[in-house]
Image (cartoon, rainbow, N blue to C red):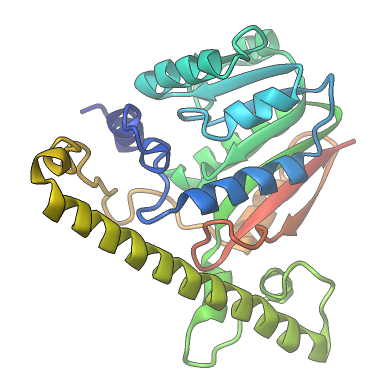
Length: 299
């Protein structure tokens, strides 16, 4: 074990044949949700031919492969060496190895000179990474390095950010989310104000509730099929080695709790002429309560 449990977890699961597990997605994430996530990321990046893309925290390139197929140059950056090895193999098998590669780089430790060598990119992706920061300093540095990699006119997607203050909108005790930004995110990203916020929030929560019901039914069906398979062929089921990758969880308070107020404060301190806005993940994207996507545009 190293001094960084996040690195250890990603290296541990990287060789799993389950793409959700190999990319450290939450347990129970379905293949349909992974496809929805890929489509949502590509839509928000607005890729076109000739563009270059850098991905911070690329892992095994679950998103990197479809992104690389749409880009003229892709560079994945991750601090987990086993995950990087798997990522490069996935890029090779996908037929994009001539214009895409993954590098073992810790963006918290990279120097300005090393950053210059990487170059500037039309698009930067950092998906489900910011919440791994262990301090405000680490979170700010990740955001700053995201901006540093952006070329003028570039767009960055900081995706799937868990925000504690927006999660209150999901509770059953009737509390409302704190702050106008939290209410805006829960409203679905529209310019909701006054009485308009409540029905839009209700629409968004209804959408997520329906998705949760459909997913639960799908998982039950998968569980029934797996149980039938195991009963029919115990030896074949045993070869799947379900315990090969036991679930590993981070200790409580190991990483930083995020909020819209904190992220907004860090964004205001970034070096570089940038603007930003919040958006919801599209329907069907794996989503825990209070998660939102952050788009950063560099002028």
